[in-house]
Image (cartoon, rainbow, N blue to C red; front, side, top):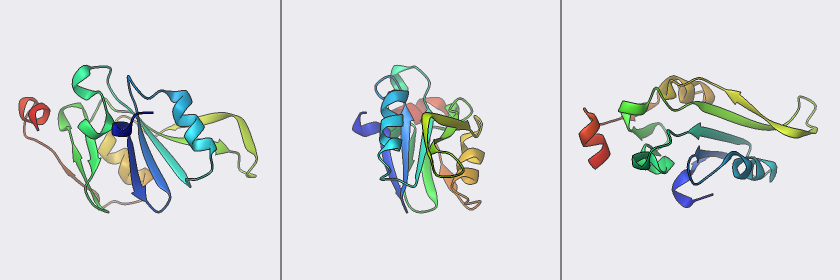
Length: 129
């Protein structure tokens, strides 16, 4: 896990980018610690410009994120569940997909229809910023 792929959102919620540097096994290990009540994983495109979560999606307050809008439809959002409905530890964590529309997925997963996403108007500006 690399620091640029980790974002604590508060209230026991951790968001982690699944990227070239942070893999599924590492994310599952963090989820298994039990430190967080919810672990959200965001798959990042395999491209150097999007190496870490913080380069494409960052929390900037309780109800706001910066977003590299040009790839917003390419980032699949998951919740990583390590317990079953009876709170028993699962042998293999479940990755529950919430789709590739990162805006809608985070609104759903965070139960916050008022989330605001700030993004650049074009790809060039998004990459530079």
